[in-house]
Length: 291
Length: 345
Image (cartoon, rainbow over all chains, first blue to last red; front, side, top):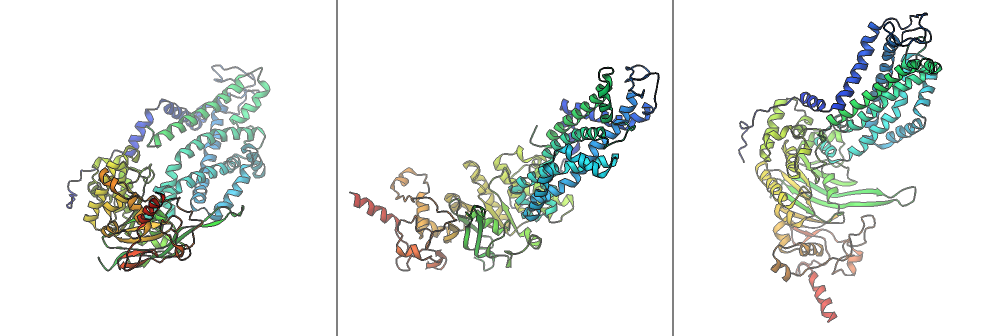
């Protein structure tokens, strides 16, 4: 054993990490359905508006019309094509849901990891402030922020991101707090790893499960949040279409033209379902212990 | 024994604040309370004691996973007891730690290859090839198959995981390895193979080792020298042979007599001393000798005077007990029991 033959060390066969993850993902039908739904949603947002026609063009001869060859999903009370409005609304929803959550994660995760890893007075200060913000219900908080910021799509994204921030920080910090005392983190300290390395190489990957679950709940929440803000006149301004705006104006015509509420509602439901299934799948695939 | 010590610890203390300040129950827990240690190059020092005696805290101080309250820790002649984590970084490659629980000591999100290579990466070795070579060598040295490198920790058995922990600890060729109960979580059959591996690696690589354990037979198997710890302090330290041949401190004697002997005939003929009571709380340390509350031979002086750790019968056999005297040697703690027995008949 004294002579360790380096020459005998077999050439390292490196199975590509990406390929293995993909294979594991494809073995989960629910995850694949989720991916398909999300992909369809993204495709609709990107390509839909290019083929759907003008969402503002009014067809006065066909107000509240049922679906037909001419108007695929019918028309609304002003004779506007519902399919065109759904396609354009997908952009708003995608942006509001994904961008706001992404923003909250990008800002909140480093804060949460830092607070949980370093502890001390800064942690106390951040978390007390966080507790105050968490006391506001998500929607009320977002409404308040949007009212302060002013009504525009950019401000809706900003308001929804800030409203999500406290829960992202709280979850990340909780994970960091549990992980920092585990032996493998102590081992990394003993390696001489820098705090930033420990936070992003050790704590973050081990917090992914919780963060993915949080994100898959948060994205649909933000999509619904955008709808609520738009309904209150604090979000996207009419006549710009958004699923939320469509859903709320449809209320008045529920008896005459239920399809006006059904189609945007269905879109919100499918997008939500898609993100949830995709999130569950990703969580399982990324956790090496579950297969 | 080489004159140059890899590790010299003097007067190490680590106090924690316990209880609640709001409820007025705040008190100081003296986990480690004045420990002196030295480990020579290539030496394995066994640190043995009950749970709660502070032995793991000593290990965490030596690896500076925690900052001692006072005292000095000299690693290769440099005091590391007060250095900041940043200042410690250059010395990190000289000392490494193996933890007790192989299920929580390996990052579940990394493959075995990544885990073993991690110390090299943190040392700044960017070349993947160089790291791969190091990993291949350590896998071979620790008796793990090369295919293991793409596995994840949860796919391995406890013994295999502890081999990985050893490979990881030794890849940078540290001068000192702190092994904190490295086999206590393993099956007995696996314990032996890990201990043999550790000895073999120590022979090949020549590192020093602070081996922490509560298990006397494990410590006897692996150590060159042994230090016995009780309530945050070392009560006796000497070579393995000497400690087992002529234990002097009443606590050491009790420990040795309590250790199970595989041979039943031998076991029946032995005098066993059962210590009464539990380990006192490190928050309410007894006055005088800290062992006097459980010591079968304690005298009045033990209740008031704290004995120093000194070489009474031999310069390399340090013991902290008033009753060990130069001419007479150690107190006979079985005598008390016999006297009790005589009295009752």
